[in-house]
Length: 211
Image 1 (cartoon, rainbow, N blue to C red):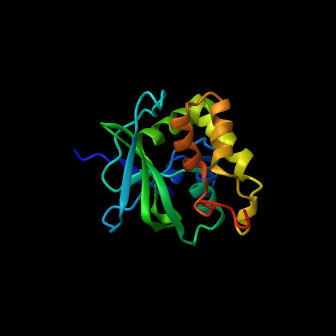
Image 2: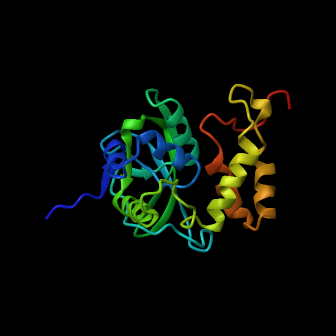
């Protein structure tokens, strides 16, 4: 018997008795893990493995098939706000039998909300959560979120929430973000990866203008 590994966003939302915008919003808040299916598209990518020592709490779930990658908070927030526009995906995550990978796309891959999928394990988790809540509607809780992921979400809000995408002078320096994450308990190697992960696709890279 053939079983699905993932479901398109609209179908997953229907099965959870919600809508795709709600799932994208929850993903942008770090409450739901969403993926993107770009199988068959020609793209250049570089995979940098984060070893278990650097990522003490790997997300549990089935392996992601070829062409399927986990999207980060900034991509989910963009797609929630602009569902009919392309998001230039430059970074993503990948979980396979070898561990967790940080993936960089060069050039960025254009994606839309219609490319988003929900892994079967994540769908099952959300359905179980909903059943436990009974008839009371509520947002997915954060019990599945590791301490490191919570720290990344906090860093994203602290350093990028008030940044103007059109004004690079409002964008934080990576060194400042890394230092803040190190103060939060990360080692420097993991903090550098994390600072890159939370930087929005529109975030300025390199020396700020006028500096």
